[in-house]
Image (tube, rainbow, N blue to C red; front, side, top):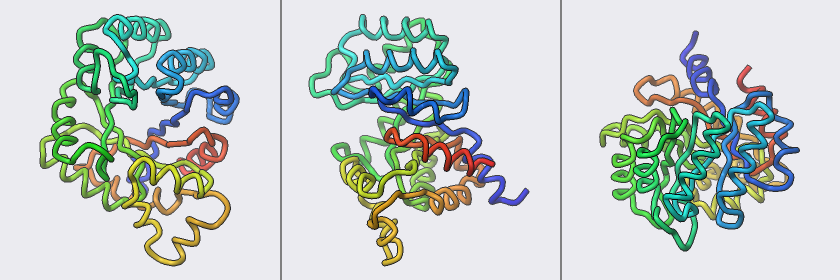
Length: 274
């Protein structure tokens, strides 16, 4: 097996599809393979209840469900206990803990505080993921982000990166984290197949402008990005497969930001796995 084949197998051996709780989400999920891993987000607009309810529906359809537990949307230790109990009833073994975007946090102002509370509960999670930011965070500096990962590492099983379009930046960033003592396996956040105009808008909002500029650093790439139609991450996946062959990076799969454009995203990644 060549390095590229080994890298592709490692990169796409574990694919997680992120879903956003909406009325149309269950219908969209029908385009995923049976038993696919699905990560269910949490948002201030809908709250944690919408996340839990969608998890219940997806688990009932045979998916491997990974709920987002948002610290700033979970108002108290009591509420966290209720959420954990309800998810344990579904037999879920994987969770993803995020700080979240709630403007008025309760007992948990950040992901670490929720992780510490979770450690004291009787829960069913054998794997817990945390967020990481290869291109930084819009309001948190790099030193604090690195310290946060170090603090969260004892409670976590892996880290998932924010969506990034620059494979070399991801590789460099992982190397920096390893030197800092962060040893968590990395699930790389990648875009699905998505309308280009929507992708540009989302990229600017979540702070991945550097890699967006990398993607558009020449005229041909810029035209591909801005012309009407859909962005397909073929070149990005190929570049990531090349770096995934390096054992020291410990890349453990991809997390696909579908933005609920599930059919095209699933078709692309399932074909790429073969």
